[in-house]
Amino acid sequence: MVLLLLQPHPLLSLLLAPKLREAVFSLSSSQRPCSPPSSMGCSSSSSPDRGRQWPEGEMKTPQMIRDSPVPLLLLLTGVCINGYKPVIIVHGLFDGPKEFKTMFRYINKVHPGTEVKVIDLYDNLSSLKPMWGQVQGFRKAFDDIVQKAPDGVHLLCFSQGGLICRALLSMAPDHKVHTFISLSSPQAGQYGNTEYLKRVFPEFVKKTVFRICYNRVGQKVSICDYWNDPHHRSRYLQSNSFLALLNGDRPHGKMKGSEMN
Image: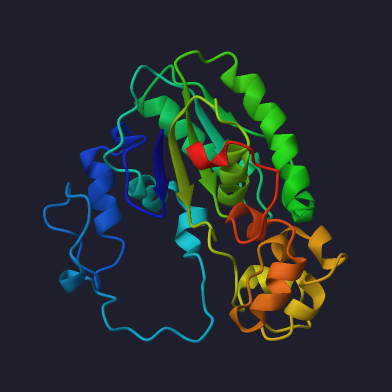
């Protein structure tokens, strides 16, 4: 299995025609694209963000990634879909299948015949339900699709969905996933005053969210399941029931065989 976490990678390179690439690179005149455009990435010395000081705690996903498929597809440049393997898409926090309609159309337009499954579970506000419960639900839907794909599948997971997919794969040694791509996903945990945080806890700031998250009640909210406050590490390790287990920070028996994945 090929595993990609927040890195430019191979799945769906055929989705980007030359004109589409040019459109992407012209989105901002203030930033220079890699040269040539077909390269896999820029060196650190040519990065326009080198040396930039970001506001404390700010970890925002660019809005254009969620509103347009073009930047999202650019992240996938270089991946070849081999043998028309099905593509399974798992949405993120406060999202659902409708946010991926454009992605669905692009895949089928450029690579006709590809089966694309956007799992319709825990949409919108339901995405706030406990993470382990979501993992079990997505796993059942995932298994139903994989059973009909003897040659394997590609798994594309966005934001919170990246954590769900990673946990799912850790619990399924024989998953038959050829390529797993986790996009804009808080694999090391979330900590910062993001737009999503304000929607869930409008009256709190990042320095006080741990008081809500690090207890039994808080662990029933998905974002609390991966809230990783570096200033309260001991409470995180003691109270967190999802990320601490997924990252191996605390002994557990939920993911047997995870060492092989």
